[in-house]
Length: 251
Image (cartoon, rainbow, N blue to C red; front, side, top):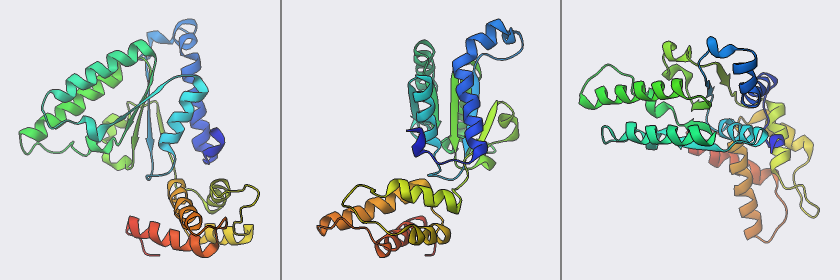
């Protein structure tokens, strides 16, 4: 649900623009006669650290505009068989055209990380694949979203081809508090730490929305196995320590 996505005002505003484009593109192109000047589709780049809501935002966009979202993991698409990638992408865009899907390319870093100086034949083909994908994206008349963890991986020439470049920042302390409250079980009979304790945790420990969900799952499993319906601050801190360890961060 839309309320599950805790985002800053600027990010939310830019997502509304995408929603408006999907809903009103026919009018824009025909009634406003923009088709004389602009390419038919709309291209957006979502960038920001993993776990900040890029995929969830794309799914919610599909829901609010009543469009299917087709998610493609680009790290899987960039095939080691030269020529296969082009064939797969070509079929995908043909299907998307007829079905009015929103195309969501996740893990786009897999593609852009390869725009290197050509060292061997594979690099050369990798660069060709990027060029082919860009051409397909430019020609597609629907909404195409690419998600990347690092905007710095993408060269400026390509950034200019996006109508929207939307940053998904890590949540602020107050957003983290809201995320803890939303994710922890608030049902009758369950016991969770007080707001004061949760605010202290939210202030001190930087986690993304996805990280908070992982911690709550860890705590809930711990409690359910012990036959308890309580999640304590101590459990949450142990869960955060685990999450930090996973990310190679010092707790």
